[in-house]
Image 1 (cartoon, each protein chain N blue to C red):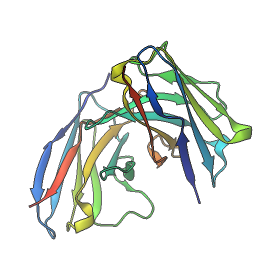
Image 2: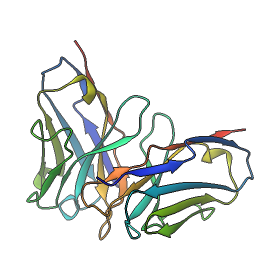
Image 3: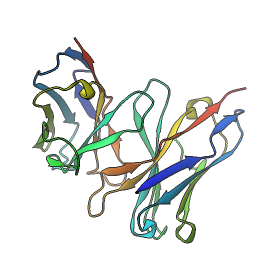
Length: 108
Length: 119
């Protein structure tokens, strides 16, 4: 199975900061990668798919990049509503999907 | 609006069974691949099972293979997960999710239903 590793597992930032979360795949997955945001007690929300395509309705401060094994999610200017847990997901090995362990973004 | 609503969760003893349902609305259910994804308390996301739009192709995670059965009724716009021989490690919130057309990211998720396996 393809293993997805996110870093960091958690970190603190302030509103207005630019933040980057990294996701690494244990083998090449081309651009078959999605990013989700999850808030406590809520279902995940799709932010980015195909590594860099912004899902409809998602603010443009979110962006994704990468291909192969290394990917990043960037939030250009943190807003209060962005404090949440973020997950990457590979779907290269369709449909045996795997998720990263999550990155919890907290307010500094 | 486009919506998925799960039901059927609850408390069950180890070795017991439970059937989850997911009701779809606001889109042509029969056009979309569907999956079940779970999240144990305080843990990350784990894909459980997949079913193609027609129901002809089905896959399971190794952790549930032989115990869980996914199915769908396109006439009723519904997805199901029959869970047998439940174990404590199956305790989780179970989400149904829709795959994006022409992609495999999950663009629509239900609110989740909690399954607790405990004696």
